[in-house]
Length: 165
Image (tube, one colour):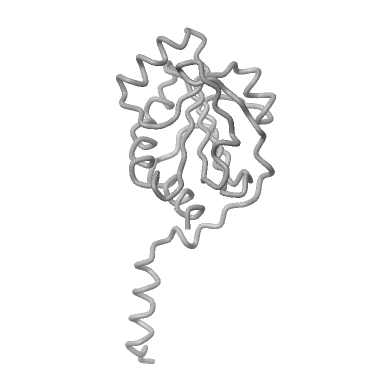
């Protein structure tokens, strides 16, 4: 059986749109309202990011997988920030804001960084068994993905693109 050229062309167009459109993320529940302090002591709250796709990443400077993910988040912020992506790194370090501030500058982190105590974070987000733990929140405030541990940036990008479209 010979396949008409128009079908082949259509198939190529569909493939060229990327697989992100095919990614379907489940609804995991409503994201909690939260307030944390940034590295200058100013309050940052979830309400500031309404209508945006938000990555909330719980991490620490001493966590090797957390640090390995940072370049991917930096690139994602550069690439999709104008499209409505917000990344919030929630440092769970207990060493103080000055050390975290120095670390953020050294690593060139271009996204919002706040600090929290682990018990505060667990109470809000329903338990964080380890770090990194990351929540992906859609534009309506629903949690659409929760990952415990590191994930390759290219894989995570597919999930983000699905919510930005």
